[in-house]
Image (tube, rainbow, N blue to C red; front, side, top):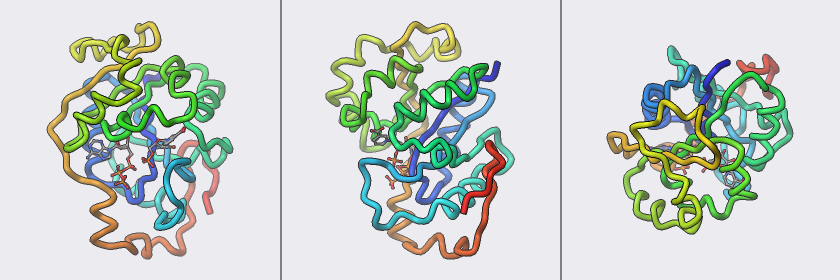
Length: 209
Ligand SMILES: Nc1ncnc2c1ncn2[C@@H]1O[C@H](COP(=O)(O)OP(=O)(O)OP(=O)(O)O)[C@@H](O)[C@H]1O
Ligand SMILES: O=C(O)c1ccc[n+]([C@@H]2O[C@H](COP(=O)([O-])O)[C@@H](O)[C@H]2O)c1
């Protein structure tokens, strides 16, 4: 049995903040691996400005080098866009793994708009990582008014495989101000070096083109 944290995102582009929070979560939650689910397209985000999937995956692989982080575009192959569908499909495909959903506080602030978000919380434990500028919105979010009663103390983080669901843990981490938005502002064409890239998905061994 492997303990796996799932961090879903656009990764447009992946950055050191993703890497730092993933390694912190791996330590705190005793994860064997962190899978970055590089999304074919966030259902709530506009398509404009979204770099091609092979470029986002190739760059994520570079940022994750020499760590237990495995970037994957498996959602493109599962044919799922909504997180609830991806999580159910992953559990079916990997019945021997134990999964936990990881997200930054900005995602918790919007979580109530996600499809069947209560179902997500009933499918696997959730760990939320503090993010500069978002913690107040996250704590006061509409989803939190329901999730609040399921919050576990951070000192029990390593026991997440034993938790009754729903379960949520809020993790404090050295605030990391890095974001993909800032990187795109600095260089909107960050993906140009990957324009000819064909990349193999490390999880499924399939080519992503
Ligand atoms: N600096 C950070 N601190 C905490 N969580 C983060 C940080 N950067 C990204 N995350 C989390 O990583 C996941 C994937 O993030 P995403 O790919 O959207 O990057 P982003 O930097 O938030 O991008 P954008 O600025 O385009 O919204 C999300 O759960 C997000 O909350
Ligand atoms: O399932 C949903 O309704 C849903 C709505 C918005 C975002 N998500 C997921 O949230 C993750 C973070 O997305 P993003 O684009 O903010 O990095 C990514 O895995 C998305 O697929 C999921």
